[in-house]
Length: 378
Image (cartoon, rainbow, N blue to C red; front, side, top):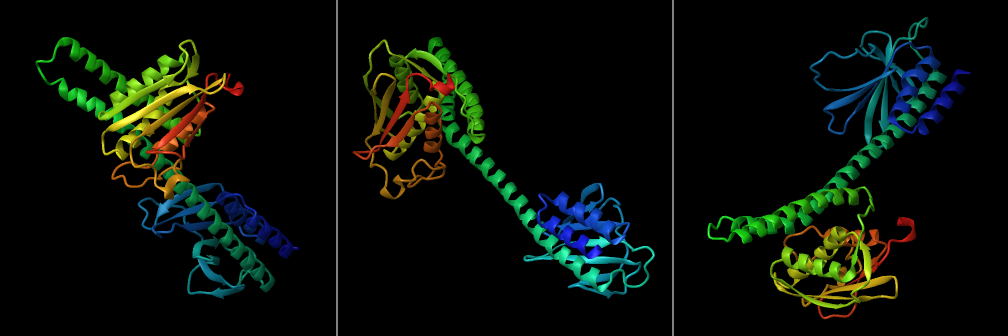
């Protein structure tokens, strides 16, 4: 009867969804099955400088040299090793059950004394079943600890991605802010010039604030847009003007073939960031200065096409297929390789597409965007 119960507990630890479930089996159900009143589970971290303590109804972490007193573990005189109970020079009537996994010792189960039983606390059948349970529990704990570490590393990777995006996209507005702020130190500047440059600084700071929120949206897989209706021609002109302001040394050549009455519903901030990231890469490819051609035309009755083309050396063949993936970059001393990944995200948020055109010279990107939001976004 008891052996069958121990086999059932062995199946439970293998299917346990988390460490607390494993601890519940080892510190509550196993002692109850063996008639033991006290149990404690100790799990070490990989650095072996602290461990988690699981007792029925309580979990806490302590260092190997704790400053505070902790709940004492049962005194153990016996050791369960590969199905055999060994007596040690220790005190008390408790028993240590090592939790040995593939990577080594992951923890220790400390079982208290077994009332009304003198001498060895487990019989041969119980010892083998408990040892098997401990081995399965160790494998389960090892997997769960690895899963926890993997989740933590993925969160750190996501945090690093978000920080990299901010560093990448803050660079251009910060350049504008610094440049205008330095010129304001000139006491001979006319009042009108000072006012215009101060307003540009305020605009760039506001944009940095919006970029922070948008980056958080990107990290959360957000697709929220702040669409505003405007004539497509005016939106494109504002886009070209913004690129020229943000990227000194870049000459924006406008080639718009769009009827004046056409209205588009766009999130102009996100479109500015998408085009700005492509334009910033173009300027870098051209050595810090050069011409960027902006070509726009309607693509049917419900969309428009925007082509951004530079006069640089073009995109190397070895990265063309992965160009829009995060961290893909080549030949740049600065930058994180996130610019085009962000550009694609914001274009796709609009329900559009962005692609690298095969024909050159230089790099030519084609953005296809709907004039109206898709039905699911209306």
